[in-house]
Image 1 (cartoon, rainbow, N blue to C red):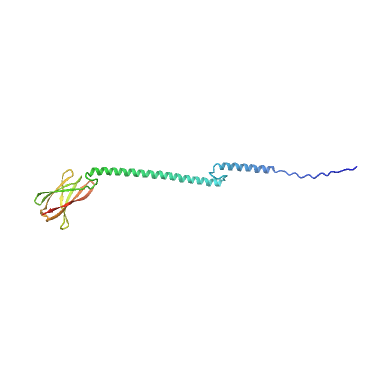
Image 2 (tube, rainbow, N blue to C red):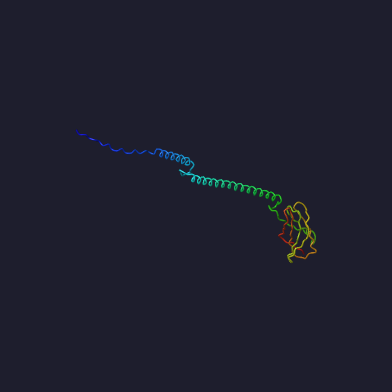
Length: 202
């Protein structure tokens, strides 16, 4: 009777799984994923994003917002200032037009023209008539063409609205041609007007 013996193969050592380690790693990955998802919602174009990138993007967005608001305020300021200037310029122009229309009947000017007329009332005696709108006083001068000298003749007398008269006795003056000039004073200042024709003294 033969007997057979079986040899039992040696048992392989059982490796214990590091369940705790893997479980800890899994928990850490889950926490990191949640953080990435929460940051990803705030990122405009790149995710996942860490705290450094988030701060950079926040600074960029803030800078863009600041520049945009500055441009809006600057545009509003320029538009308001320009409108105020236009309104003020229009007001000044309207006031000037009203003043000019009131003070200058024959010309829209603060220095209207003077019209001269001569009447010989006696030999060598002339009435110099001048029509000047809104004058307050007039001085009369004679320019002697032969010598180039000005002679102050005197003050004209107001004869009515816009009409003035000066009587010139030429006895003390040399014979020759004289240009008559009026030095006009009005509410805006003083200016001069000369006749376009000369007066002959004989």
